[in-house]
Amino acid sequence: MKKDMRYLCYPFMRESASTVDFEIRTDSLTTHIGEALALTEDVAAVQRDLQILQPMAYHLNGSVRGKLAIRDEDLIELSNMYDYYVNCTRDKIDHFVLPQGTIGACVLHGCRSEAKKSVRALHKVSLEREVPEILFNYANLLANVFFTMAVYVNQHHGVEEIPFVSKSYPTKKTKKKEVAN
Image 1 (tube, helix red, strand yellow):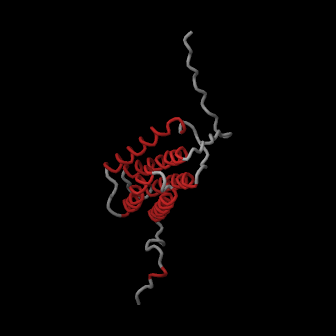
Image 2 (cartoon, rainbow, N blue to C red):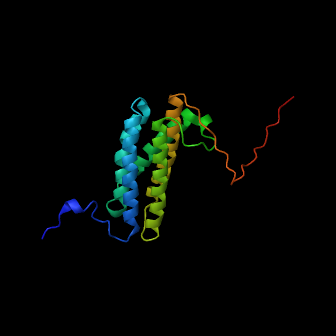
Image 3 (tube, helix red, strand yellow):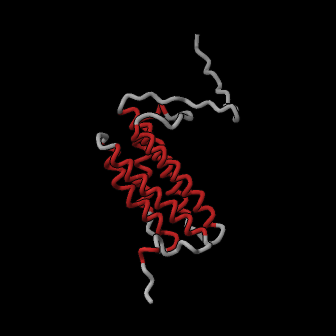
């Protein structure tokens, strides 16, 4: 008798390999990117880039179990996105900030967090099988892009970032520049 597919949400769910957890994490990431798309319609650069990144998250997803779908050109494109947002928000991202602000920025912080969870799940996969370094590079950079996008969206809406100062980890003291008299 043929299995009724309505009782199966994902064909690999019962596997014990960490690949499954990675694929579920990147699926969640892709869903959060869709949510960010819906909440940032008024920020053209973010819309353009999220439309690129949403299918790329699914390509990242399939690149472990299936054919490697992340190429050097994709990493360069992501790196260029990062450079764009860093250049636009440079003075606001030189310290930790609380994940707050507009709803769009908050969802982008959620994307950042999901991307970090994906990196961690990818690490678990790498303990079981060979994982191409480009996947780690892409997933790590993706998290950083989402952080800079969140700050960019807040900046676009005039929302100030709230610095976070940890009580657990001391901050490094910076050397004061000597002023010429």
